[in-house]
Amino acid sequence: MKKLLVLSFANALIALSLGFGVAARAQDAKAGDVVAGEKKIAMCEGCHNLPRYQASFPEVYKVPMIAGQNAKYIASALTAYRKGERKHPTMRGIAGSLSDQDIADVAAYYAQLGGPAGSAAAAAPAVSAAPAHEPPPQVAKLLGQANCASCHGSNFSSPIDPSYPKLAGQHADYLYVALKAYQTDHNPFMGRSNAIMMGMARPFTHPEIKAIAAYLGSLPGELRTVQQPRFR
Image (cartoon, rainbow, N blue to C red; front, side, top):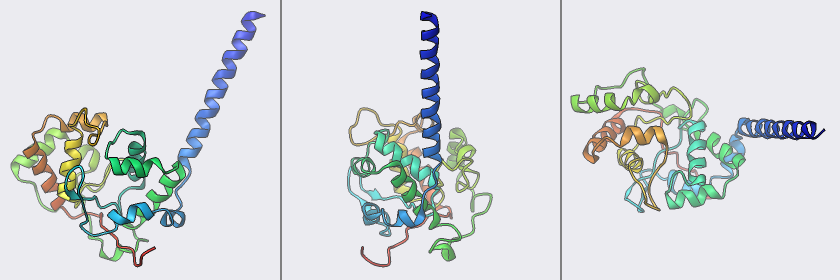
């Protein structure tokens, strides 16, 4: 009898855990709402909707262009800030105030700005299957060493999974700071803990990272900054 009770309890725990797993997957799978997302970007647009706007802490660099970025990547990045896997203080504070649905909605809104239905679609440059121009030999060697194209696509604008970012045309100074963050430990204001990117970035010197960032930023891509037509 005791054994049967133990087995029943164990089975109940398994069923309960499976139920939580199904619920979590259902929540994760819920699509973002573009219309709802547009109403939730008040904390985003003061930086990401101003062309060439520069952050001043912890370093000075242009905030990344996120209009046209993959929704799954935007959601992944915001979740990483919320968890503390990315340590930028401002972004951690903003992401910490967002629910899973808020994140999905905001990500859907910014992603569609770079697609055919986006307000900036007419200005979108064509993105070919290969880079518009070949990198200098030393940069090509670095890109090959890091195997960047295997995840971000041969043109660095067609990642193999939408949870990876488009890089082509992104602000070079932002890419430089982002890559350095994967090399940073024991700093409360900077650092990113993605294991894959940490392994890719850490072998390089800062001048090498800057050269990679400069090349990626020089490529045509789908990313842009879309200004709001009015103050909210």
